[in-house]
Length: 204
Image (spheres, rainbow, N blue to C red):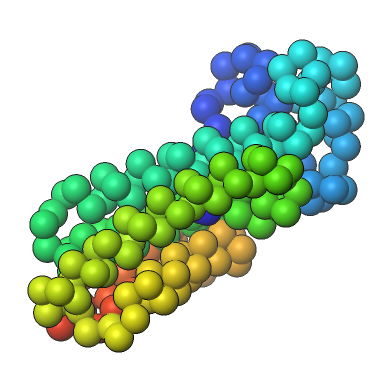
């Protein structure tokens, strides 16, 4: 999920260079269309150098996916912690989530749409983190329904729909496009609150 994966700024570190190169290569060619030579060459290393830091191309993808999903889990928890009002919580969460997926759309596409390339064990770990993200959203919507702030008949389905909507931003968003990340995030905030049946789905 979500998960966008901004890699640390270039600092000459070999793992950082490999991560950046892998992210770009997976985004451009897909996991199966990318070779370890593609990654190591883009990172300015020999093919053998990749195996000093990662046992396989799949392990490299798993690292990117795990780091990205864990970071998004922290992001949504922090968004919710800023308020006790479910309407504000859901609005802030969606706005932060969508902005993140727009800003880091390359990484988000890789970690969300290459899950099938992970081993069964690694995929299970990522799915557990995604489940935790889903729980954060669902609990906010549940609290809103209980308080009368939301009127959705199925909080669980609404939570899944809200997250799916945000994740898909990474698929279509482009830096040279019509809208800025902030504009997309603000619009999706309104959409999500309407999906939840908020009484007052205005901006924060």
